[in-house]
Length: 154
Ligand code: HEC
Image (cartoon, rainbow, N blue to C red; front, top):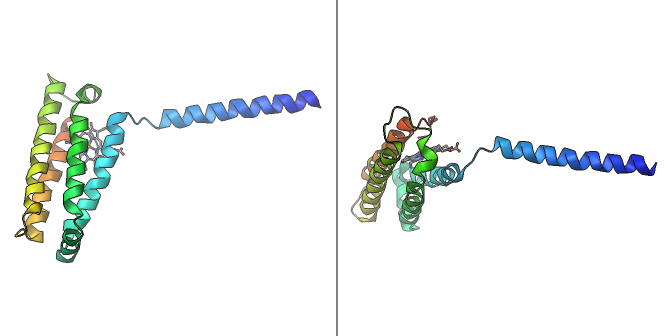
């Protein structure tokens, strides 16, 4: 009776260890993956803010857009140093780490431009929206080289 209880206990412990191991294996998220998830969340928030004139006005009144862009820039600067992690995903690039830095710099430049655009009081929602379209394009430019599949939300 006593033994049986014990081995059941051991079985449960090893089962728990096994499922934990599985959960870790499934979550392939390296640091870059985690940054990208945050980048995506900020992007979604910004897209919502520029989608319509009403949304834009409200987001500007609450000063939501600029802090989100600044966070996006901060995340991109963090990711900029992760070229080594990304390098293995690049296709047909002789120097993937260099390409990574170039693409990240292009992204940073567009994001800074967008921050300046939305900081100007005269900027209309249509202008803000098209300026953010350029930022999104630089996400895609990098994902194309580093083989990231995008869904339609971009
Ligand atoms: C300089 C390159 C680069 C730029 C710029 C870039 N990404 Fe990524 N992104 C990557 C790489 C590489 C991955 C794959 C990371 C991984 O999963 O290991 C990725 C993955 C993702 C993912 C998938 C994460 C997941 O949950 O599976 C999303 C979403 C994403 N990026 C959104 C964005 C958005 C939105 C932008 C622009 C605002 C952006 N990325 C800009 C390189 C980039």
